[in-house]
Image (cartoon, rainbow over all chains, first blue to last red; front, side, top):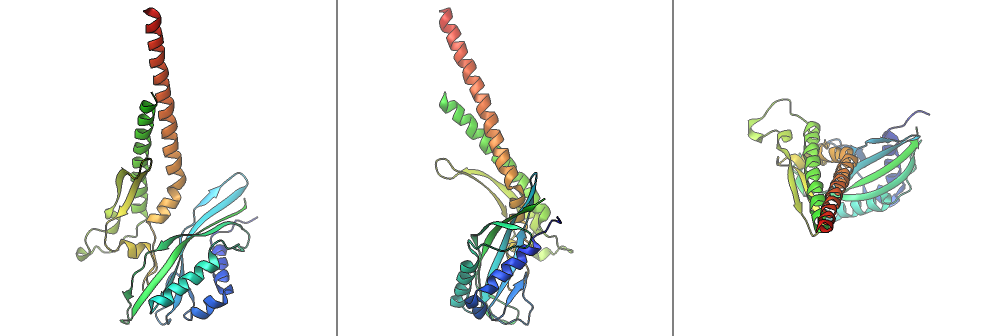
Length: 139
Length: 134
């Protein structure tokens, strides 16, 4: 069987986030990979991969991936709500990853975030978390 | 006797922890993104500011070694911002080294424990032999 990488984990994360109706309703700017395009309006969510080292065993391959999922919004209340919705959707979720079995899906840390001024001079807030997702698949 | 063993084990564990922290700092520096052109107004390049801080006792039985990046923009490289995609370098290095850190420290503890045990048995034997002589 062909080995799969962190790509199906990313798809599963986005799929899981989109399953949450309140989250989809609240993140009107959408869900973006690594960085949102300039024209996107707040609030939005950015998903990025931190690392995904492989651990090979006799008969299986384990991927121990870490992901940052950060919400951006123009007010602090909105950003807190979005971050809480992401946590509800993902923490301890039974993530359906194509070709892999999910062993663990947990929020493991907060991503540091302060208010900032973006390119258009808008004051923005960011809040997010790091999620540890471990999967296994046959070698 | 137990105090001697525990002191030897502790010293070996802290040495191993410091050694692994140095290795982790080197790996993180290798992973840190390099700017194409050096800019004098930004201070030292990011990879040059990454270093290990020797382990410090944190509570009665906890020792913490840290790897830090002193460049002021380090966190904006490690974590995503509204303008820039993250280029993590510290956490990937940690994730890759996690098993090696645990194995390195635990094997140092085992070796120190074995060494200290052998020394204490030898000392005991000497005392016993001396006792028999007298």
